[in-house]
Length: 297
Image 1: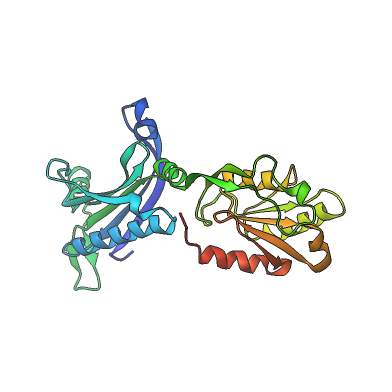
Image 2: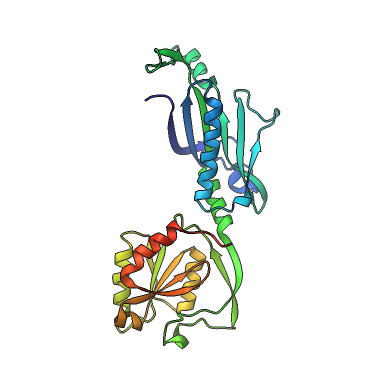
């Protein structure tokens, strides 16, 4: 390996305290993701700033509300004795701002200590630069996986008042619509499609007349590319609500028209918009929607 390079891992981490009022922020055992990035002394500030950019971009890629993220720089009373500089990425949880991960310039402290107590020479030999020898500096980024999961759920959770819903292209509207008043409340998880537990859900409008079999065929096609659910129980509006609560971005409804012309209804979670699309274009359309996804709330 040539400098610069990194070693990353995800593992169990432990601490000697449990404070139950802080939920997962102070559990004894938790999942941690770490990267140790080895760089040449003198280039550490450049690489430190580079990893700050990369880690911020990671949360943007997850579709997190950017206005719920902020940097916190460690002051003199917070900075670890071995650190040259350190920043935390914080998220605005319902209980306030909390740390998601830390990015630290650990200098050459770690490898110097290893050298001292192991008796092994850990100098790097730079064969591309006159065999110069030096102890690499370490840029570290350390993030909590469980905190990230909690952040994604908090960020995605929404409740809103909406009009009752049915398959707008169905002649069986009295069967497929939701029951109750003209307006109701829905709970929705607005996950970015790339991290949603289920990407697509296929639903036959009715269990009979071959619609269920056709829907199963479509589901078998889509599951090769996407995490795909199948749901045939209850009114179609209620099934949409169930998928909203699970954060499923795309629902595909198979109805009698599907048997006639090979089209299906594609329903969007965030807007609840429904469009008619040929069955053969589904996978391509969904891939493009994931690529172009922009959260509207």
